[in-house]
Length: 253
Image 1 (tube, one colour):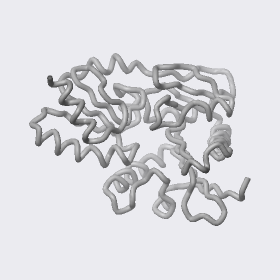
Image 2 (image 1 turned 90 degrees about the vertical axis):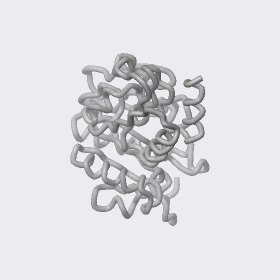
Image 3 (image 1 turned 120 degrees about the vertical axis):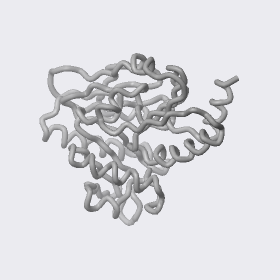
């Protein structure tokens, strides 16, 4: 394996080392995510980035936080919880880099005397799949398709689980978008959707999840983005403006 460098990111150096998924620093979405992250660092969130020798751009990063502050619809108190893990481009995948980042999380979790590590994976392309975690001896402890809750426990104790998202869905009437700024792509998208809804005279209520507790009670497992109509989940992750319009037109027929 080539010489690699893993850098710990914090509020002081994040502008110098923006993760791959971040937008251009001049973009509004980037600035929104940056502001969100600076609040999360005080809660114990960590970001680590992986660089190959001779390359200026990061090829991967991992974002994780104590389970009490997980921004997913999970109960993972006492565990370290992985929000995101990403290796890019495709030529760098399946080379063990993802496992190196998981080991960084493992070291911190043990240092902080956690019960273990937990992560949500998806069969869809927008999140990491469970294969990487299976390779690192995680086990699926809960399933709500397309999501799996993957856990690697260090000691005996309670096991993380998904929250009851169906119960949360029943609370919503009419058109709702429930989102958080955990993903910069979503935060960029929200303003565009709001403009479209007003142009179409669609009564759309947009609610930002501002705390981890609120995110843990979101109407979908991923929690970052939820498009809901009369208690029905129509999209549980970032969608294009065209996809949004197609969904609205279909439901309004």
